[in-house]
Amino acid sequence: MDLHPSSQKHPKFLLFNFPVFSTKKQISHALFFFSLLLASLIFYRLIAPIKPQTLLGINLFSPLSQTSAPQAACDYSYGEWVWDEGYPGEKYTENCPFLDPGFRCHRSGRRDLEYQKWRWKPHACHLPRFNASDLLHRSRNGRIVFAGDSILRNQWESLLCMLAQGVANQSSIHEQFGKPITKHKGYLSMRFEEFNLTVEYYRVPFLVPVCRPPANASKEVKGVLRLDRLHWFFRKLVGADVLVFSGGHWWNEDKTHKMGIYFQEGKAVNMSMNITEAFSRSLNTWALWVTRNLSSETHIIFRSYSPVHYRNGTWNSGGNCHTSTAPERDQAGLGRDPINNVYISKIVKEMAMMGRNVTFQNITYLSEFRRDGHPSTHREPGTPVEAPQDCSHWCLPGVPDTWNELLYNDLLLKGFRGESKQM
Image (tube, one colour):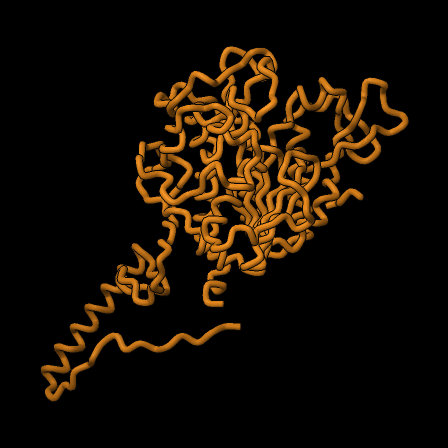
């Protein structure tokens, strides 16, 4: 089946102890003083509006918490990679049971571990460390859902292992339907029993479905992407507390036209529409579905394009990345921002202006530096020696952990289920 798309009273605080005035002269001086103070406050209000919880920039009602609040004015997506011998500290290792063999680069023969020691440092602000216990408590009795391609699965597995560090009995974490953690066409739902939380992944690389062509289509058409519908998995996404989407990697000539896959809207197949236009129309269908089916309480994140790093050829013509052992230092060596990001950020911005709880998470720039972070020749056991290098996915632990640090801080910034911490 395809889819179409009480207020609380705050306690009063006595901020000043007012003295008793006995003479007219004292009263006159007091009135002058308070008039001057009032004028100063009004002037301050005009140049720097006072936040409800502050007075003259002093935070009066700041909650005590071990989790640092993210800085609202900070753009975490731009910065630099810095060497940090203590990083990743208490994070997971390749022994995490939720990792696909293809992402365990060290086990697959990679000898250097330096790619795990680089920490992302945003310009002009601090990126708080990921707090597994905090996110687990905020997500209690909830659902965190990832829907997209295998690069998003990379991020999903990373988050599973990061969250598992906050669980005392990790053996209590299990796949809800008994499915093995392996690459397959379908979906997986990992249940964190202690928190009644599921962290789910749905494989929908195009978001829209690939269907059989109509009977009257040209013989060249082997399949169609229905731009006016979404994959039937989208029925399962309704009710999620956090929804992370990705798109764009499969929207290329190799995955569409060269395979005889064209685009359909209504009953008409369009063989002349270019791929970027088709991608844009699929996003419109996605946005309409979000508007019609998701609550304003759902936190929606559309992640940007994850860069690939093939040198001296494409993925199927000898391209490689195995010689890179450190982040790129020269910005001139970075690729251009993919056009897909322009379309994604545009529609997310339009939806946010309409009051939807949706965020564009830009991981492209920071990931462009990390040519060293891919499996390259260190693929899963049994991969033929002559097989293409993998310069698309990422070693774990690795770069996707930083994406999840950004995801965590995006949720904190939006106030994601802060009240759950008290439950």
